Image 1 (cartoon, protein in one colour):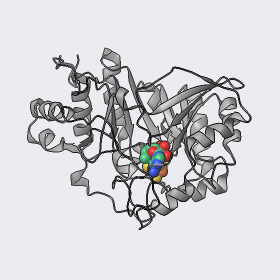
Image 2 (cartoon, protein in one colour):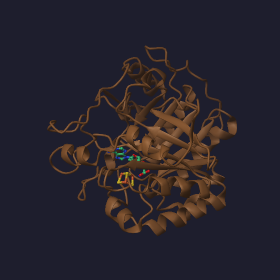
Image 3 (cartoon, helix red, strand yellow):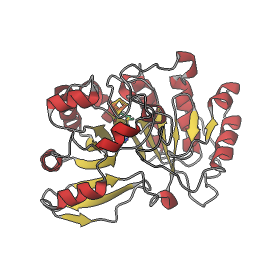
Image 4 (cartoon, helix red, strand yellow):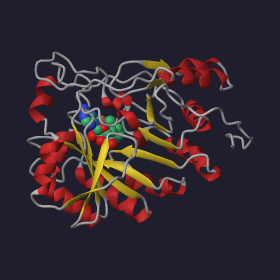
Length: 348
Ligand code: SAM
Ligand code: SF4
């Protein structure tokens, strides 16, 4: 295994949690900032974290590399918007070294697509092969409404650049009543034409975004994926697949387009047995479960010493407390969100 300077790193013992699940997938939020303000994710006036609290690019590299050393096979960079972090390509290029040595199978990111026109070629050159791009609607006016600051043509240009660069694209769409429920057939058809897979995500009760805990807005906009799937089946032939990623997504194949369609229902428990992942925020806080508050501070051990022994020990200890499952609820009667942090903090 190669380190940043090319020297050999000894692998540690693999990360296995108390329920026998191997942790091989790490999602890292590289910034809490974003150039959009999606209504379900952020309030319009967010206060962002001071720079000193955010891990530097070098610290993020050490952190990700420590996970790789501990058996992580897949790294996903997210945010906030990962591609608005200054010099982000320095980190991505550097992490690409683990792909070259074969220590990492996949380096990928989840992005809103706004900066893809600029970065698609560089991402491909760094070893990225697939990306997730979030688009909830193909109607430019609705897109501007949902993202507040986003503009659809800019994202579509980014997608063209990604295709030209040879990046495989999966579209993520949050299912929202009154926003995109009338458009789901168009989205399936469009993804078919473009050669993109498509995943619908059920809206999650994360973070207070409108001052009342978000409960009212989200309950009004809640469009269950059961209902969405039934709506899709009125027009498309969906064939079950056994494709799994260890996460909450279930996939079907759309016979008419040949593309995969995923359904992420985080409110169900049906994926926890196969959970292979943890999330780390841009301040170095590791959440062992998206739906639980328990977390471990990895920034202190990172900053305490230049060698990784304390960091590795902190990761191992925290994985020893990874819970069996989560307890999300979306409920009008609740005063606040089930989990108080924003998705832009944890990273989606
Ligand atoms: N900015 C990037 C993007 O939008 O793809 C990466 C970060 S974003 C937090 C990751 C994913 O989380 C996006 O697909 C977004 O739609 C989703 N997301 C944000 N808030 C959500 C919520 N409350 N419920 C469900 N999905 C959410
Ligand atoms: Fe930004 Fe992504 Fe959150 Fe939208 S979902 S505000 S693009 S971080």
